[in-house]
Length: 149
Image 1 (cartoon, rainbow, N blue to C red):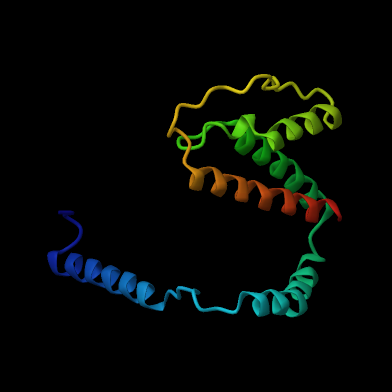
Image 2 (tube, rainbow, N blue to C red; image 1 turned 60 degrees about the vertical axis):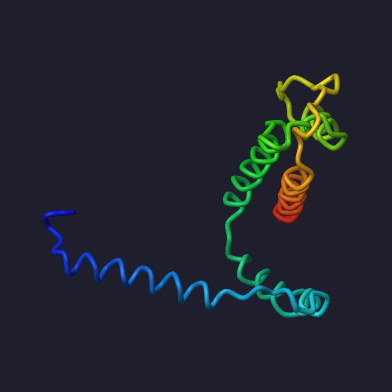
């Protein structure tokens, strides 16, 4: 296949990769039987304070850049229709997002979505839209956290 790799080395290399992939599959936990409430409480008491302490060394400029990146990602993910979820840019929260950006970001020029575009039946998949909305919720939470600094 490759002149610089001998056949025996080539076979050994791919065998090693396959074994590593199998070990990764075996070591992956499903988390289906976890006590999510207790995990959240432990996170709040143990992990979150440690993360806060870790983040104390981050400069203000880093947070400023992260805020800009976060809002750019929120804008892109809110207003760019994606396959399986074309209606998200017309959702109530998207209109409110546009209004906040237009009021609080001088020069913001994205055109407001004034009318609900008809979405063909079956075009939107509930799971796709919920997954995207959940991602946006996480981004807003992240933005809120980094804006406190």
